Length: 86
Image (cartoon, rainbow, N blue to C red; front, top):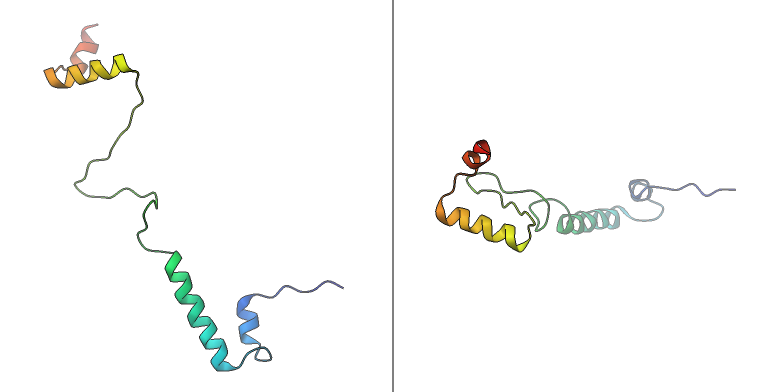
């Protein structure tokens, strides 16, 4: 004979295991515990801040490409124009 699995709500609702006060305390404690770990803004939640902050974009390049990008930024090269002329 298989045992029927019961949910926490079913166990708390069955007053043969707990008194009303015990069930309320268990439920309150479990809600407090759940709020500690779930919901709200968390570090590393994966969402980027909205608003005036620019996104940080990372591109992996080799050292020669990095030096070229650095040179282009310092000297105000217009990369779009360079690509159209080619």
